Length: 199
Image (cartoon, rainbow, N blue to C red; front, side, top):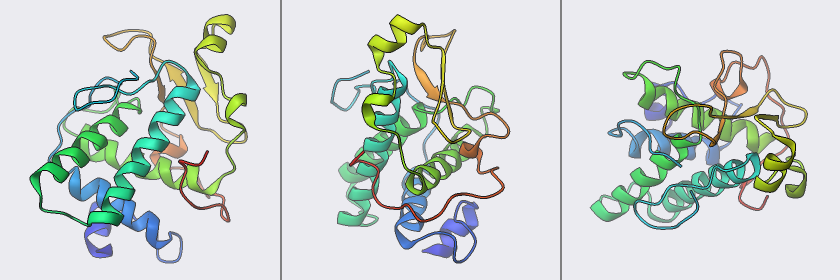
């Protein structure tokens, strides 16, 4: 299992990642290997429904809940060969990728680098204390304070509002060059781990 994930270059060096993180890395890469592009992200539930990305809080919620669903599916069913399970996991991974700003990446690299960025972001978020949920701006706060960019306190992780295109107004995790989302942080905090969904 770790060999496959290492082949894709997203598993941390030996001793730096716990087994659950390695499993998530493998799931995101293995199940998502055939995905192309991303899907816009809203709030409904269904096979074609986008995620809610109307505010930093909504995007953080959407990302954490959805990536935790992928991990839970893998923990429950493994690399299930059932086409329905694989389709659902592929759909969830597309939604996770929609939470990231991948617009600066060459289209030929969006799938692979997007999955790597999602795994890096999950790894970082699992290791830090998130602020209280009500301290993260919601849609009302975004409108009142005209928020276009919000930084996760104590980190270099930014959620930015898209200013153009079909997803104008959506908040996405920035994947700027030195962002921890790209795995470029010199060191990552340790000691905090576990599912993010309880946030």
